[in-house]
Length: 460
Image (cartoon, rainbow, N blue to C red):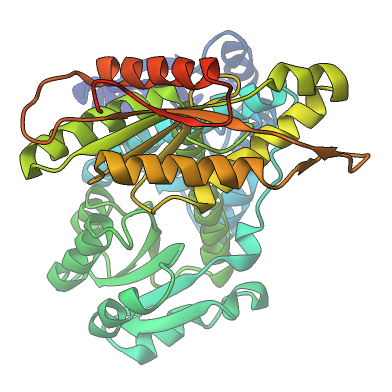
């Protein structure tokens, strides 16, 4: 099923007609006759969408919208209001009460289905963000609200600058500084010159919509603008044009003669939705980074390092050049923790990680693979270069003491390194075996007195 829909209307004819339209598109429909019945239903059910009539026997549709919005909190339930008589005041009041839009009765089927498809597409993002916010609160992490509403970049795009300026004219002062007007041609030439817009307001002539719809499709498909929220401003009356705009990726729709306050309310909601979508993407990116990096040092972890070594080995075989693997371990690290505390040990690990990072090439890999154990992998490196680099890293760590946090006491630290060199021409030793060779070489360095480098006998 595409989704579950609740219809709230005391007029049976309205409910039946709407139910037939929805059932034809395979929506699961529930019908109630009053606002209180709807609120009771919502206590135990979670529909994907609610249709609310503007007039109900026990309360107004606006009151019900406000109650639903207050109950669902961040889990914003899409509400579509239906009305026999519709004017600007009702649309504005409905938007303020939490409705997505107001649809005039009888409802145009083409526009209805397009609006539903758009709302169903966006429900997963809304639900995902709700779940992530709940998890953040449960873990007692603060997620400060970002000031997108004040800093939003809005691009008004029309067939002429004068038309774009006319659409922009009612914009609140807080948005004007970052609102710009474009024709289609000028917009595309500006995309690569600065940050992408948060919202694109695209004017589409319903009598000749091809150019405007093509522009909208381009906005949704290109990397620089595909994440922008899009408000389509339709010039003229053409339900098919509005439906096409929604299906091509417009997030919302408004008539050219709509009240300025209505446009600002819709922009407010689109900016909030853009904020939400950005948070979802950033959360996913942060999660991926967290899965691959060590939280203390910021270095890559073993989960990342092993596949990277595999790719490095494949490249070495293909280009006939060797690569080096080093396993480095801090000497007597437990003593630092025992004598100076774990805070001192953590400070040493972070500083060692920084020194290692600063003293290898950009293409080299540095990872933390154990408590005080580090992996350094170097492509295009022979055994002499590897041994020289390992010796330099030992000196970088051992010649300058580390400062204990709080006291500033000097903490002498040394490091032992085992080195193995991968094959140049044949896919022989698997990376796990190569890492084991470097590990055995490290044991040799420890056995020979520590603070030194040992080359694997296989490599030598």
